Image (cartoon, rainbow, N blue to C red; front, side, top):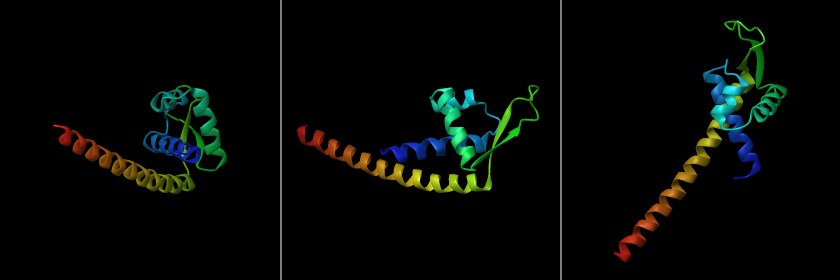
Length: 112
C-alpha cells in the first residue's frame, strides 16, 4: 500500500466515523482508529483546512468547549470518492487472497 493510499484510508475511516457520529471526541476517534490523539488532531486539522469537515459546537454537551465535526458537502462528496477507491482496492485484495488460498489448497491436496 502506498503512502497516498494509506492517507486516503485514514481520511476515509475518519470521515466515515464522523458522518455516523459527529460528536465523537478526538480521544474517541483515536481509540476507534488505533492511533494517537495527536495524529487524530493533525488529520482533523487537515480535513478542516481542505474544507471537508467543519467545526460546530456540540450543543448537547454541558462543556461548551466540545465540538462536533460535521462533514461539509465537499466532505460528503470526497467520502464517496474515497469509499469507491477503498472498495475497489479491498476487492482486489480479496481476489488476490482468494487466489492464494485456492493455490495453497490445491498444493495441500496434491501432497495428501
